[in-house]
Amino acid sequence: MKKTFKVKEKTPIWGKKQTKEGKSPRVGTNVTYEDGRKQTLLTPSGKGAKYAHELKTNRRYTNDMRVKVDKDGVVQTLTPEQQAYRGGYLDAQKDAANCYKSKKEQKQAEREQRKAERTAAKAAKAHSGKAYGDSRGKDMGIERTLK
Image (cartoon, rainbow, N blue to C red; front, side, top):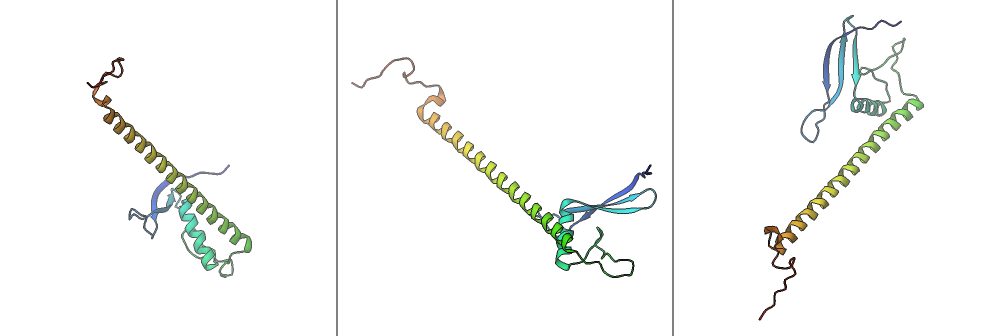
């Protein structure tokens, strides 16, 4: 049975790029366990940034962004399978982002349409005089004639 250790400390890792709001995105967490082990856990956006950097440089990196080397000290490069996986991961992220944006725009358009319909209904109600409870004799079957 694998022995588990409790987390001693968690510290966030912030990205270098800025969001639209001007904040740095959270790309991961450094975790320190009671036995002294340190581990870096990446968020999906941090993993995407790591994969993009690996594809650009054709080198493998750790989650701490240190270059991975083999036993002989030679820098590890990406195999074609690894390149394909990383490219697919980035494409999937892009597709998910486009889908989210499309749904968000569609919901916003629906909201604006409902708001315009409510505004038009209020204007029609105010124009007919019913906004103030004035039926002007129409509902009681009384017809007014001009003499």
